[in-house]
Length: 487
Image (cartoon, rainbow, N blue to C red; front, side, top):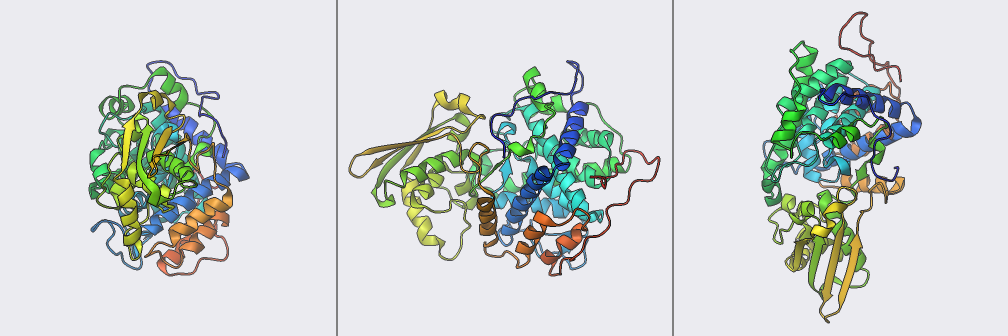
C-alpha cells in the first residue's frame, strides 16, 4: 500500500454551486477502472474482497437472532454468514454487511471516516450473483463502490455528534456497486447514488458503544437499500434533485466545504490508501492497542496497577471499562488496552476457553481510564494519536505512543501477514470448510470465472476448474448500461 496523506492530485472541473455528485461519481468510476487496468491494482481490489469475505464467513453462528436465518438450497445468492442460499439479493447483501460488522476486522479509509468496502462488497457480491456475473464484474463493482463511497466520505466529512457513519453515505457506495453489477452506466450510477443519499440512515452511535445489536441494522439495511435503489434505477425509476448537501446538513456537520470538494474530486485511486485492521475492534481503538502491545514487552499483565490513555476526541468516546458483550468490547479502548497488555485478541467471540482470558482482561480493563486530549485532535484523521501511560505495582511509570497501527498504509502488513489475519478469521467457530478455497480463488481466479462457481464451496459445491465466458455486452442503443468485459 502507498503511504502519505490523501491529497488532491488533480481533480475534475466543477463550478462552485454546481451539483458535485456527477463529477464525483465520474472520477470514482474512472479511478476504479484505472486501478483495475493494472495487475497490482487488481491485486489490491482482490485483497479487499478477500478480507471482507473472511470477515463475513467468520460471523457464521455469531449474528444476532433473525439476521441470518438458514436459507434454502437452490437460491441465486450465497449467504456467506448463514447456511444455504436465497433468491433475494437484498437479504444476501444485508446478511453479509451485518456479518462484516460482527467480526469488525475489516478495512477502510481513515480520511473518509468510514468503511466504503463494507457496503460496496456486500451489495456487489449479491447483485453480481443475482445477475449471473463473473469475478471481473464483482471486482469492478467493489472497486467502483469503494471509490465512490470513499469520495463521499471525504466530501461530507465527520458526522454530527452521536451519529454513527454505517448506513449513511455507505448506502450510496452500495448503490454504486450494485449498479455496476446491474449494468448501469456512469449516468445511471449517478442517479442511483443520488437516490441512495435521499434515504441514507443516521443511526445512533451510543447504541453501538453499549453493544446493542441494533448497530448491525445500520450496515444491513443501508446496504440492502442501496442495492434496491440501484435496481429501481435500472428499471426506470425517475431521478431526483441533488441530495448530498441535505445529508451534509442533517447527518454531518454542514454542507461540503470547497476543500472537501477538492479532496473528493481527486482523480487518482483512493483504494491503495486503505488500511487493514490487524484485529477485530473499532479502528479508533487500534493505536491504543498498539501502544499497549509495546508496553507489554516490559510490564507483565499481573504487574499493571493503573493505565491512563490520552487520545483525540473521536477515540475518547470509547471509554467503557465494563463492556457487557462482544460488540461493546470491540468499541472499548480499556478492553483493547487490556488485551494488548496480555497478548490477547480483543475482538474474539465468546466461546469455549475464552472465559478465563476474558476474566483476566476484564480485571485490567477496569483500571484503564481514557481521557480526551484536545492537543491530539488535529492528529486525526492524518493518524490516530494515542498516548498510553502505565503505572506498575512498584510505582514505576511507563509510556508508549502510537499514531498508526499495524495495517495502516504508513505501517502496512506484509502479504503473508494479511493472509495470516484472514486465515485466523476462518478459524472462528462455525466457519464452513470451503471458505479457504473461496479466499484462494479470489486471489487468482480469472476474471471470466462465473462468480457462483467461485462461491460454490460456501454452498457445499465444487468450484469450477476452468473459467467461463464474460458477461454479455449490452445491446446497441440500450441506455444506461455498460459492458464490463473489456478490462
